[in-house]
Length: 372
Image (cartoon, rainbow, N blue to C red; front, side, top):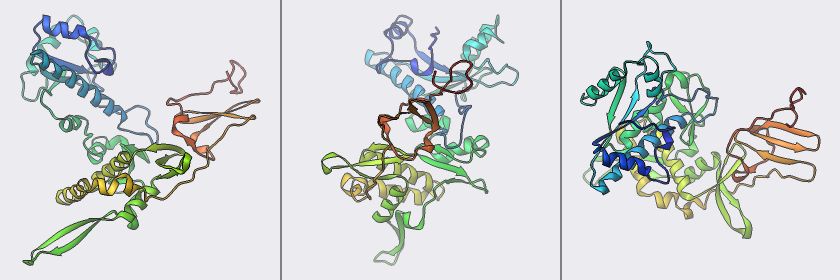
């Protein structure tokens, strides 16, 4: 039995599967379900610009597969135990590039030979590596979220950058997760804003116990952590009633954030940086940070970060603004000017930014790029 899904994110709705799928599983006594992705399941976006978040597309596939697995796990509550797989069409130089999906393949190279795919699935689902001629099948019934991330090398920044090195080394700066990275001249992944001496927020000290045995002690450095965060756009901003909120300023856009988001930011960065050290150092430092996270990154501690005082763009009777993901429009009686967000002289609140790209088009034939 096969069911067509119109887009990888459409497997379910409102945190549950369509009732029709439950009926199919029950009526046909289904024992195995396979979620088949296109051959470009782990490809990066075709339009990567400097500064772009490069792991966004792989993450969308990861979340789709994770949701699919979790949806079908709920059949246990109905007394139905399923083996859950995700699969993808294998890339083959002999097959045209546009035959990346199972529907394309069946309507193209395998037209009138559809049973070849059926037999391939029957064979490789029982193979240890799950690899067939047309399809790769992976059993994920009991696979952890961390193991699932590894299919796209999303478990850490270094693994991801290594997988896609051939593409990423040609981009001067890119985002993985919340942080900006690049490959240096030696081909090593490094943060575009490396840790300065007064930002190194963990310290190692050689110690001796009472028996004279040497060991290493790890200590958190509050001032240097605040320096690190402040120079990366975090700060306190004064609100109404002389209250303050934590904020993060990214490219002139001011985001209000919670303490846990600041903590996640610094934890993610720490793990990525420490991954280049030996494993023992990484485990010790991360254990220290996890152990003391409420003390280090709780609201009281983060209340010591310096204030920021951004000046915001404002509208008046002469002009209005519309803000989008990558540009903004300045609207006056004489027309509309489109400029990149980087050209903003002042700042803008995140909730004022429309979360999509917009392109200004002119009236047909006028050649002036004025408002449509």
